[in-house]
Amino acid sequence: MRINALIVEDHALFAEGLVALLQQSDELNIKVLDVSKDGCDAVTLCKKRRVDLIFLDLNLGRVNGLDLIKPIKEASPKTKILVVSGYDNQKFVKKAFLNGADGYLLKGSKREELVEAIETVMSNNTFMGQGVQVSALLNDTNEGSGKGSGHQYLDAYSVRQRLTKREHEILRLITQAYSNKQIGEQLFISDQTVSVHRKNIMRKLGVTNTVSLVKAAQSLSISE
Image 1 (cartoon, one colour):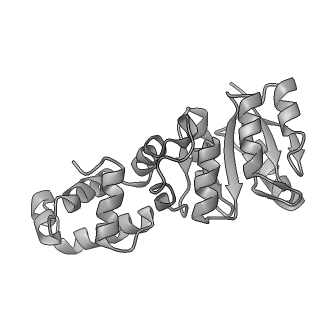
Image 2 (cartoon, one colour):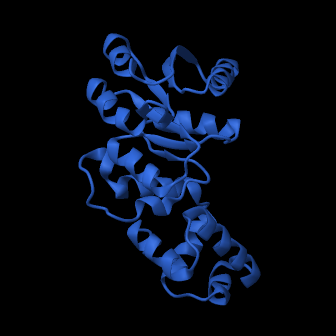
């Protein structure tokens, strides 16, 4: 099925590049209905036409992209919103999801990741791109209400997307206080390999020490 999309982006060069990329993609069947510089007409367009997906920048000059998410969702609940931003600030990421965004992708991401993001949100799942800190959603779990505000819903999926099966196994053992050597013996790999995996897991989850890593895993219900 063809995806009707709207791009809300005030930088013309980036918007033109995104349009070209979407139209040239063999994996996607996307028609860009319009490009809006400030998003003021996004809600109106969603009411008049079927808009399946919106690529939303946050820094729109006169308008804060974060403030557009709720009105768009209220006008067209089925419309997916993929934030495409240069900001990886935890406050922006958290607020975007609390307001109802379906995905968050950093500008500068590879084409393959853009395709993955689109396919993920259009499959009714949540996407968080590489470089977006999962730890941004680990605090203040009672904020907001509804599907868009549930950090368990968001983060559990994000971790499944970010971590490999092996990394998931290692993280589970780390939460059980296994040492690198013990994990290696359990999984029949060297403790040096375990150390590399541990560093990769910490990088992907945006934490810097084992205590924070264990807390993150527990918050995500993957410690058992």
